[in-house]
Image (spheres, rainbow, N blue to C red):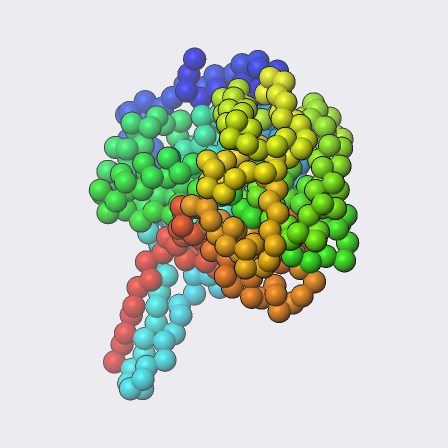
Length: 455
């Protein structure tokens, strides 16, 4: 089988295989991207590039049913969630199109001696390599591609091996939107090809969204070649419940935060840390919410939980649950697997320092912890190698501010879930990576902030 293939996780059927790119084809793609990087920014304005980005977003909307159907086949996302992903993707393209001139404008610097002028000019980096994951096939690409195309960088996009059809669909969108040849190049590359592509002096930077292992490998190769790198890696995000006037609503928010995309989201809430006085009621309500969300056919509009993305993913999650139970964890709900489908599962009683408390569970498995105090909750929340997102639920605004300040994460959401937005920076801390995507911060990652001072 080719490395790149659509294997429907709901049925196990291999739908279509795609050939890997040849070495000479890849060199030609890098050449086209380099030529576009040298000529396109000089021959276009930010507003003109923004108009192309806007058209890419419009084409996502026009083709939303087709695009959503593709990722249902590729990675099992329920159709309603797939449609929502396409819609959010279009919003990201619109955001950067609307702000193309603002994000690329010169930034004046006030000189202390008052003599002359100084500005920081944001110039394109050049050719960028994007290595994207399977769990949000369109959204992940948009948050990398949209700002960089507005800036005038050009893109080589290596998508996940199980997402070749969505990768091809996005290439068609950029072609049909009117981008010049080389501005966006889809490459079905191997790991070995990526390594030598990173050594190519025409490639100026790389952005990776994926596992710790993948991020470390690419960062090492980028470091050897002195290339800028942005990493968005895994997470084991805490959901900290310290106070609530409505525990049922808090449990509903917790279930939503755990089950989106069958729990296969880096910034999903995964560890639920609850103060003692709310623990029993929360656990019962949470268990009820998850039990009501039965796995089902991802093509059905009422399905909340689809299959995991592959047999490998299901086997890995099953092994994690098995090891947690062997080490003393209690299965409060679920725990069963049927092919690539995994029951929504709740684990309690995980010992401090146990492997389960330090791993990322990439699927619909929640860990619930009881704590006695705010201090204990914060300490437990930070007792992880990860630091991507986090959630704090409390009725005390001062407590919210205090806890948010102490959480070791790139993002803290207070009294809400599912609140990602194009204008908000997305990224992590510790082993969850570094750099930011989305908002102004994402647009500033791959620009040469050039000082120009005049007398």
